[in-house]
Image (tube, rainbow over all chains, first blue to last red; front, side, top):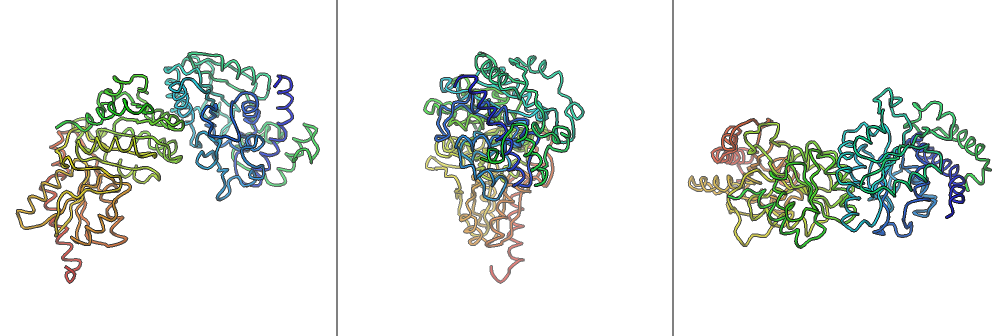
Length: 286
Length: 318
């Protein structure tokens, strides 16, 4: 797709995905709105603009892999997957319910199209590394993308993988950091500061790209750049806003990590998303 | 006696020639686990992840999602202790085809001391859904187990090996089968249920008991999970008393598994030999086995205790 048309498409999709995320979480009565809304633009751009994948053939062995290591942000991934036809959109409203394929954290044994079961933080980058090693043994047939949270990078295993991915010169591996600055107990800078983050990854031997994680042109450029890097893994440090798109969440990120909105709050949030995007109610819920 | 880890390394190298999907990972102890033998033969399919067991197991999980067959190896204490949650969440929750084959299990690690002696790993692995747990008793069984889990089992497996070798307890007609105990000796008065290095101890004890007029059967329960419930119930029915022997805590390992099986179906006295809720310490393997009560002498006393309990608990029945 031509670049401007792709960006236009992503911009059209964004408010719809945000409404779906809010509806899903409200229907579920639990979940993580802040980190889903901060990640959605990155995940949308990745699926629509970069991943080679086949929704009707989710186990296609040459597909690019995507590991959502920050598994609590999975409503964002589900919203995009439903839109792409991995499963019927009605299934979104079964999120977190007994027997649902849409588990509270992504689960490959429950839902085709999920490449890794995550949820326990800090493990996804190693899994993505394993996939990238397999890709190499298989003749470099696919790229591997992993999305991690900023608070998540406080886990020691992340830095074990940072070392090993550099040792193995995994150019096929791209890590996207959703740097939304918040975690359950507050701001990352207060709980356990990560800075200087880019310097840390550079020191570990990674190619570092820093962008605004809500700017599609920057996201797409960064994904292209990372794909061109050979001989070392890349990290895209994407500065994002926790709760992006909903003002009362953006302004109080500490309260919206792991709490679903009430029906009334969700209605207010959805009205705001629609207003900002100039969407009618019918358009918003399709 | 060839160390079982040597058999493990040689078996991997042999399988590497035939199975291109076989990938081996280690965490800086490949010279000790003997995965170095595979590494030398197939350097492209060997990954030394450094001293990072968590990264190693989750990387193995990622490899397995693509159809590779990763075998990850380190010492039992680190593979199942340091990386327990990676084993649980990255490997077993999605039931990925990862084999964790750990060496240096139990107290016969010896001089390195309690920090390096895994006496809880059978409990902490047995409790994880989807995971198969196997403790081979001798070299022949070790080679068969490794080949079986690589070729035939598409699911997570934990195999625990000791540092040293063990006497042969199986002859050339033996074939390992997951979920099956092997009956090494027939007997009427008690059944000695053992795994790993304790199987040869059980056989020696049964011979000594024979000299005293006590007839003891011996079961090698190398497959702790799935466990051979049928063989255990049959043993309980036939002999009415059980003795378990393991180089592990008496909590949650083989003794626990045997009690779980018989208590629900045919409760009989079970005496458990193992570490009595204790950590190990430095010493030679033999000294430690003696110190913690894992010898033929202790097995004989335990067997007599179980037989006495049998008479006490149901004098009419026996």
